Image (cartoon, rainbow, N blue to C red; front, side, top):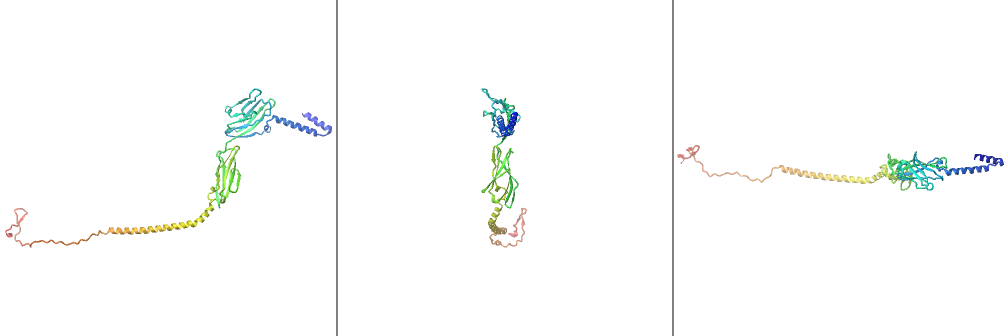
Length: 346
């Protein structure tokens, strides 16, 4: 080929000095060579860049294979450095021979298309990695290869929001909201939406610095997390629940200013009622004490009874004046008994 091009170049230059036909011929030959090379290559393998694929845990993924070789002796699928499957395509009446090297993968692999594109089902986290397919053909000096990079992800759960240190000065709330996943999933991107009645704003990143005044207490903040296969959003965070007192600080002063006269009036009325009640009770206690003292004095006096006139009772004795008895009492024959049978007393 090189000798032919050299002969053509020098012959053209010697004949008329015009090299344009030579350049045109050279360009056509170069393009034809590229076309022929591309017809036997596996596309991306020429650049050495793996084809990126993503899958979900429990789901499935297809590794596409575009065969550009008419005669294929064997196809070998490799995961990292382990051979997964060896295929001998069908020829004529001979059926294809598929050999799965690991028993645990027999129920997981399938070839839904005639081009032997690999379908891997029931994906697991450890299925992530580099896959390579080798196409062997007797018409090629070297096997054609194609690499794939598979990443298996989990479906995202609801992200949680952590409220940072809060500062409330002059009715302005200043704080940070941090969005995160509970299990620390991979390749997660975060964004925020700030919603209010007037505008909707967006912010990228897991941390949202906020500063708002009490006039905008109707604002709502939502964190959105996403990965290559799913997305989820957090529960809404209401601004009025942040920086306690920021939204109601000035409003509280206004309310107190309006209610202060009413509060004072109620206080004075209550004090007056208490004073009247205490005074009334004091009077009642004094009256009760007086009645108690009077009753005690009455009980200490001797009982008053009806006076019954006392008369001296003088008994009347209808006796005669005793006459002089010249005889003394005479002794009786009975000891201790005196007898008046004195002759002088007869």
